Figure 1: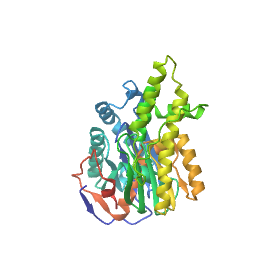
Figure 2: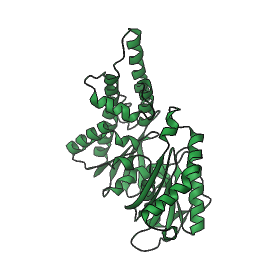
Figure 3: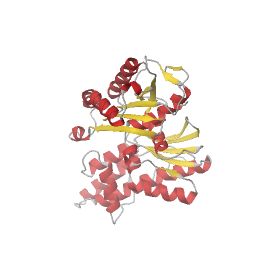
Figure 4: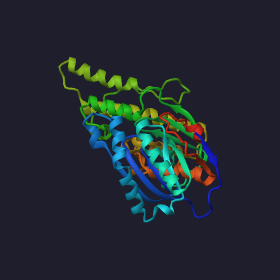
Length: 349
């Protein structure tokens, strides 16, 4: 990413306006000092995309265009400030859907130019991780377990704003696997919350395989688990029996949770983490929260989890991450480009 280093103004903390449009939520937030959320407006497109069974990129981009100005105005009004009070404009630069990202980037560049304030291109996953800073202090070194629709990663933060990915998915992300299994279980999009609820209510469990990969690996693979669920459904139907969807949901969820929490705890122990953070949209999963909380307590590792409204895509988390760059005067130039694929480690401060 192209950038320019300048000295950030002194004071009680920068007033950042942040824009997030990486997928199907249009969000604008106003945050002071990286911690004080004055407004965090989110416009979801779920109802629009549900009829297609998933996000349609072109439609997502058009919806961002339709709502962007309205959401900016609402966020500023709700924050009780004026645009002339804004010290910098932050925006999700990537990763994400390129058309959707472009809408946010163009809006942010235009606003920064008009207000004559710095622009801060921000990494989407850094936002998910630093959403935790909105609810508590982060202790370093820390392990972040990132679980979302498009990402499943274990990230080591050796110091503030220093990211090192030690494990990532080799195929489907957790959120993708949930949505694909939900579709097989006849649930509407987004299917993750339905699978979680059904798994919590189940009294039986179809035991499914755990993909641990190599003994020392922190990587993940969920495509085989998804195939195992489909195989169980087909096996039942070939016998003329109705598949036990609740038992399958429980079996699927238990397999996912065992692997992601097991690897996260092992990473925390190996790297001497002083804290664990759960990040991303799937962090709202009740079963995952409960298991990771129990394992962290057992291991003596404090756990930070944002509330559900800060787990899903939102602009407040982008402001929290952008504050890392603001305080160091690491600003982006106006030739900033949206990046569908973007390195988290290279974005480090």
